[in-house]
Image (cartoon, rainbow, N blue to C red; front, side, top):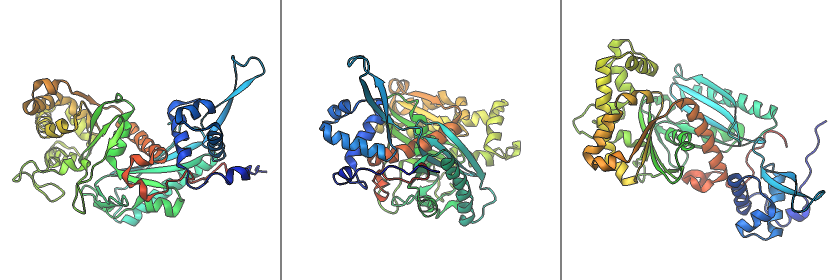
Length: 419
C-alpha cells in the first residue's frame, strides 16, 4: 500500500504561500549552484533570518525539491550530527523536445543532468500538423510513463524548434525548411495533454545550452548551428542573449541566416534573395551536389571526407563568406569564442582558416586571431542535453527567458510521481 504523503504543518501553511514563493526560489537557486550547505550558511549568504530560512527549507523539502543529509560534525564532537541540505537532483526531472527535421527527439533527464530515456520519430511522412502533434504526444506519453515508473517529479519541459516563432507563445510561425511545422504550438500541446509547463523557443537556444557547459565562464560566444538551414545563437556567461527585432515583422538573432548580403543573390527558401543561408544552408549544398549521389546531410559529410576537390573548394568559399559577413556581428557582441555545431559541423574543418581570413579582412588580423574557433563533436548528444538544460533553467531561473512570463512562475510544476 502506498504511503500517504505527510501534510505540511499548518503553522507553515499559515506563514508561507505555497503557490508563489519567489524567496524560496532564491534558496533553491543558491543550493543548486553551491551544493551541500547548512541552513545557517544559506541564511547568512542570502541575508535571511534563521526562522525565515527554516520555513523555506521545510517548504522546499515538502515539495520534493530539497533533501537533508545527516553528517557527523567534527566541531560538535561525537554524537552531535549536523544537517546539510542539497537539491534532490535524482528525484526531479525535465523533458527536452528537439524538432530537428525530419526528426523529433524527446529526452527525459534528471536534475543531475543524467539522461534517463531518449526517444525519436521521423516526421518525413507527415503532411499535416495534426499528425506531427500525434507523434509528439506518443513519445511524450512514453517519457511520462518512464518518469512515473522511476517516481520522478517532472518539473518542466523545453521544446527546441526551427524557424520563426511567435514571441508570445513559441508557436511556429514560419519554418521554411519544414513547412508542416507551421502553426504547431508545443507549449499548448504539452499543457493540454500532460499538464507539463513547457517553454518553446528556438533550436539555437538548445544548441547554445548544449555547448555552454564547455564554454569558459565570462566568455561571450557565438554558436553556429549548421544543418538544412544555418542558425546562430549568442550568449554571455553561459546565458543566452535573446533579442527580438520588434513587432510582427521583427527578427531574432537566430534569423541572421536570413539577412540578405546581396540583393541580386540566389533566392532563399524564405522568399528573399541573397540570404546567407542561400549560400551556405545544407539544402543548398544538397542541390548543388545532387549529381554526386548525395541525398542526406550525412552524405555531404562523407563526400567531403572522400577528398572531393570541388566540394572542399565550395566549403572554403562558404567559410570565407561567413567570416566576412559575420565580422560586424562578432565585433558588436564582443564575441571571443565561436562554436560550430549541428550535423554539418564537420564540414567547417575544411574551411576554418578561410573563416578566420574572412574575419581578418574586416576586423583586422589582431582581433581575428584572438577569437577561438572550435568545431563541436557529438552534436546530437549535446543538442538533447542543451534542451534539458534550458528546461531546468526555465524552471529555476524564469527571469532568464522573456517569454516565461506567460507560464507559471510558481514552484508547483507538474507532479507525475512520488506524490
